[in-house]
Each structure stands twice: as structure tokens, then as C-alpha cells.
Image (cartoon, rainbow, N blue to C red; front, top):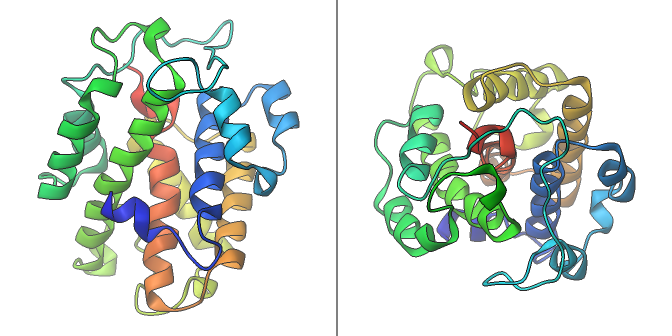
Length: 231
């Protein structure tokens, strides 16, 4: 969990908990009740996340439900999840750390890919694995000329995240949405993700390493969301 650990900052686990809250929100299909309840995701704590988890390896007593009318018919199963993340991120070859974490988390993913097997422990495992894959993506893009990058062409990884303009943030969201979800983001998703980016920047520092964490954060949130896991 190297890259997930890198998302910690002076606020301890705050960013990780906040990130998982946004992942759950996107997994809920941004339904109005969930958005209203957790509109201020910065107020989330470990207890809030625990209440969303069904009984089982992840603990908790809640259920993550697929909303009525959703088009999801199946999700990636345990044998597909890493290959799927590699394909949609375009990293070509996952790192040893990503492969190792996949083996560790494989049991948390659906065995058969049926939509009704999606649960909170699976979403949390996806966030962990997604953090490694996104770390690979960030490293790949940092080593690529800006004009040739797929996701972060407008990001200067040599400076702090305060220098990432709002236009660049919107461009990142659009590129990740098309790559991970196969569609453009909705207005609601755009607003949630823009707010998330602003919160992450406000909570962290303004060094080059913080730009890496900023890019890692938004990538992980989007690659672990329901639209990236469904088939």
C-alpha cells in the first residue's frame, strides 16, 4: 500500500478517509440522499465509513446498494480487476507493488462479477489497488514530455499543486472520466471532484511531492468508482 500511504499528510488519515468517502459517493451513483448526507465530505470519519460496510471481512453493518435503474449488469471479477485497471489507465505493465497488492486483495473482489456481489470491502480493495495503479500512472506521466501525456499534460510536476489551474483540473477530470468511465463526467460529478481537488490542496503542502499526491488522489478516486469497475 505504498501509494495509499503516500496520501497521508499532516492531517494523518484525514485525506484517506475523505477519499474513501468520495469513492463510496461515486459508487452510490451520486444518488441524492447519499450526496445530501455526505455533502461535506470533510466531516467524514472512520465511523461514517464503517456504517457503510456490510458484515464480513470489512466489518460494519451497512449495505452498499446499486441504485434502482442503474445500468450496471456486471462488475469486474477477481481475475479481471488488475488487468482492467492496467488497460484503462494505459500503464501497460503494473509495478511489482501493484501485482503484490493485487494478490493480497484478490479475495475481496467478486468471484463471478455479478452486480449484486458488489460491496463495500470490494470498493475499499479497489481503492487500495487503484492507488498503486495510479501511482504507476503518475510516475509514467512524470517521465513523459507534457505534450505526449494522456492524462496530465497541463500539470507541472516540478511545482506545487497550487499552480494547477482550474482549467487544468477540469481537463484532468475529463481525461480520467473518458479513460476510466468511457464517458464524460456529469455536472454533479464534476462539482464533487473539483471540490475534492480544492480540499486536497488546502489540506496539504505546496511542494512538488504534493502535486504527485494531488494527481494520485483524483486518479484513485475515479479508478475505484463504480463506473470504472463495471463491465
